[in-house]
Every structure is written in structure tokens, then in C-alpha cells.
Image (cartoon, rainbow, N blue to C red; front, side, top):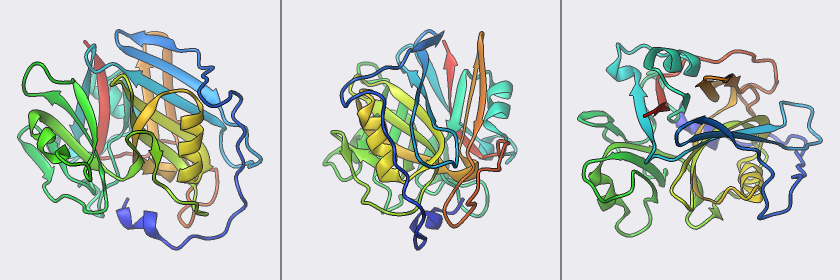
Length: 277
């Protein structure tokens, strides 16, 4: 998807109202063990909207115990796969969109480097959030998420083999950077909590990004930074564990697909995945 879609002129739609079932700072998730360093949780989002499923799905990852992976079609025959397909082929416990991509259907809209393979060497001036993992040296965090407008942030990225830049949703510490708007969509996002854990987040229910951020912040997940990974029917999340299989797909996106009829995952060129060690 072209990053310009995010900036299209909003169309006034019915307001989505959500009512979290727990007060701010509390959490009612029942975390389910997937593998060492990997957990799955979900919670309901009550809404007056009849469009979409009111559940937010979360895969919580300790990057010191589980192995984060950046898997790119540009390194594997330029072939896109669904997140379910990426999981099956590369033995992943979970996979989510790595980010929006250009009209060539391959290249990430933001900077993207995976080891020696640089898929997009151009930094996007409007994208202020970066996830980096697979450290090159000992003694540093297994993964970091940084704000590019914070001094010294760019310098820290050279210590990591995998680096992906995306549109920012929440900046440190826990600041919702989205203004009120009318556009809404199914959402795939990636966050980091105050303990350095990476979170894959998926919500089929179409929310504005300001509302989505508020919902996440109301759940006591401790998310200090978060980036947009994809929206609408392209948003996907898959889980493959011994006792849990999930293949989730989005649908609704203002100005693109204003319905909840999509029922299948779309092939995507780039995913963030995680393997059990």
C-alpha cells in the first residue's frame, strides 16, 4: 500500500465509540503461553459500530528469549506470502506486517535494512518511529524502538542488524501523537513496553488511530512507543503455536474499502516474525 493513502482527505463517517471494560492503568488480559518468551492475550473493545470484530489481539515478545525475524520478499524470490504462509514456510510462532509498501508491491515505505540487505535505503522524513533488533554486540538490549526526533536515536541503530522505519503512533513516553480525525481502519501495529518487550497488535474493528492509541493505553500494557504497520484489508496477524492457531485479516479502511466483507489474508511482501529459540 502506498503511504500516501494515510494522508487522503477524510470522509465524515459515524463516530466510533469505545468503552474499555477496565479502567486506565488496569489490565484484564489472561496471557496465554505460546513458547519461551512468547505470550498471547486478547481483550474486547465495546463499540456502537457494527463494522468489524471488537477484539484486540496481542502477541507479547521478550526478545531476549525469543528470536525476532525480518522476512522480506526481496530476499526470497520477490514472492509475497500471507502471514500464515510466512509462518508455515519459515517456522514462525507469529508474524505481522512489517510496514506499508510502495506501488512496486515489494519495497517498504520507510527505511528497511536486514543485515547486509538494504531494501530501502531512503529515510522517510515523515516517519519518526524505528524498530531495531538482532544486536551486533553484547551488552545492549535485544531490541529497541526509537523516536527519530530524539537526539542520538539514529546513532543507536548502527548497533543492530535489523532496522525498520514506520509511521509513528505513540512516542516515548506514552505520548499519543495522532490528532482527532474521521478516517478509520482495521489496524496492525507494533509496540514496545516499558520492560523492553515487543508487542504485535491487531484490531479488525476500524478505529481512528487516536482512538486505537487510547484503547491500547487504557489496557495497562505499558506501551511506551508504537508504530503503524498496516491498515485495512492488508493488516494481518498469524499465530502458530502447539495449541493455538490464528489467522487474522483486516477489512475496513476509509476511502479504500468501507465494508467488513474481507475474510482472507492478503499476500504481503514484508513481515516481522518471531521464532521460539
